[in-house]
Image (spheres, rainbow, N blue to C red):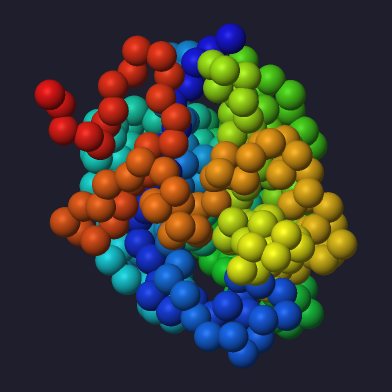
Length: 289
């Protein structure tokens, strides 16, 4: 089996994310720090990004500013922290089409992108049906959907129809339909010890979605989504069971990740968490002896 290394790379953050977005039903519970990150996976001759963040230009910039997102850094600056350039990335798996996950496509000229067909089609459907779905598609930038459709036409975006077991040896893609978005997906990376690391996309915003608010043990769905709450809770349960340990849930909006795992905070006020190293791979964030 291929041995993988895995990092979570913060590229910006929100200082005061409403808890009503993070947890369904917590409408007046205050705010918390909210990371904006993506996951980098290396192994088997591949350099893989799971989501790519936003581009902070045009519509992406407007959404960045309206959501009070600060300390934004471009993909070249973020990836440099683990010794990688955007042009080195050969595979990009997009969990869904929201601007903060799929907006930076232009930075990755040598990558093949993968997304669920249902995600792209329902995103376009929702945009065309305005104002019907406007209240639940606030994180969609229409220009991103234009770009993704063009990438699909030219063959650089491959559209998937459901789960793909062993997309690569030890790396699988699973569907997350009718949850945060209509056609989302998530990624399971199996390490050299046979443990699963689950990159959740926005099916979770916090460990507490799985562990319960204040560690109550009661699953709680995210507060921002356009799909079924029932499906969202079933998906949380599915991912928890696959991971076997909530610390192996890779939740890219969870600032707590940088406390639970080996991490380093840089001068730009952003952090990198080193979640998994394949045998023989040296740390990218610790000083070399």
